[in-house]
Every structure is written in C-alpha cells, then in structure tokens.
Length: 238
Image (cartoon, helix red, strand yellow):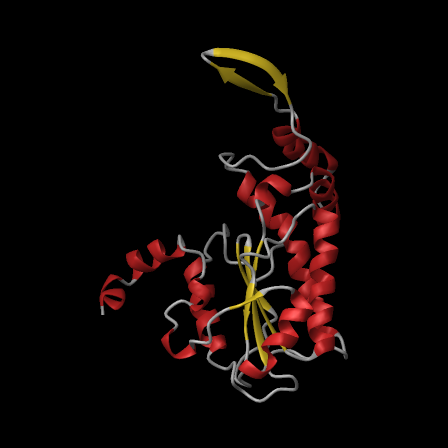
C-alpha cells in the first residue's frame, strides 16, 4: 500500500537506496528542459507532532482497513493522558488532540501511511498534460519524487505552471493532514538564471550549486550519514 517512492520504515527497503538514486538523478539537472530542471528538498516541521488523528483515520479507512482495526490503531494514540512532574510531584493531567508518539513502535508505520497521501498527489501530476517533469534518462522511469520518512526530494521542470502545480499539491496535503513545511529547511537546486523565479514561486532557499562535489545531495538528513558509514566505510574514507 506504500508507493515505491518511500524508502523509510518499509521492510526490505533501504533509505540509502533512495539517497543514491537521488544523487544519480541530480547529475542530470543541467539537461535541457523547458524552464530548466529543479530539485526541491522538503522538510516537514515537527512532523510527528502535527499529524491529524482525523486525517489519519480517514486515510486508513480509504486504504481499506476495517473499522475494528482502525479503532485499535487510534486507541493507541488518542486515549493517552500526560502529567507534568514538578519537584517530584505529579501535577494534573492533560491529553493531546493530535500527534504521533515518538517512542511508539507503531508510529513510523502510521506516519508513512499518512504521508502516502502526499506521494499519490505528487505522482498524479505525472498524468497531467500541463505538468512538465524533470528531464531524466530514457533508460529508466520518470520519477516525481523520493521520500525518506518525513524528508522528501521532488524533481520537476522549472516551468512556472509545473512548479505551481507542485506547490498546490503540497498545500492541499498540509491543509488536510495538519503537516507544515519548515521553510527555513526547505530549499532547491537549479540553474543560476532561474533562482529568483523559483524562489518567488516556492518561498524556499537556494542551495549552493555544487553538483560536482555532492557526496549526498543537499546534505540529505544528517542521520543518514551513519548508515553510509556502516555500509561504505572505505568509500567515505577515500
């Protein structure tokens, strides 16, 4: 039920695979395309804390889970009370109205099920006659984006209409899920002549144009580096 764009928290999928695939795609950013090519890195602010319970329940139902199973899932997150301990004494109780618990082993799976909505919104753009995708090699499929749990890298042309269509899908997901982009950590890569145009359309920051020295594009999520070190220790030393 989770699209291949997502590599986080899925059995037999490795985050490093999407990292390396992203690096490969980014090398084509200078290829000719209408409006040029653009790569956008999204970062969701406090992703677990903003996940709407109502949204998640609706997504589970739409995917096909029975109401009994949905009730079991929701019971683990919406029937939890918290108390503050001050100077060793417990003071009152309160409950939250949204969020997934960080230490709950079920939370990663629930999160990517909710995030699948954004994945499908972005993938649907590939079927639109008005959307112009990133210029990629003819030897493989055209990829709209890749996800690493709550971090997303989007590939598109710099065509104004295409960029606006992407932003529309992102805002639609924000309104329905409760998620919010952290614009201070969202940025893009493109050619120098298109920087102002893309900045105005997205409101994101421009990342340094250093394609030839990218080991992991955009310095993708720092904690992924530990995975790289375990898998390729000699490569990183070189």
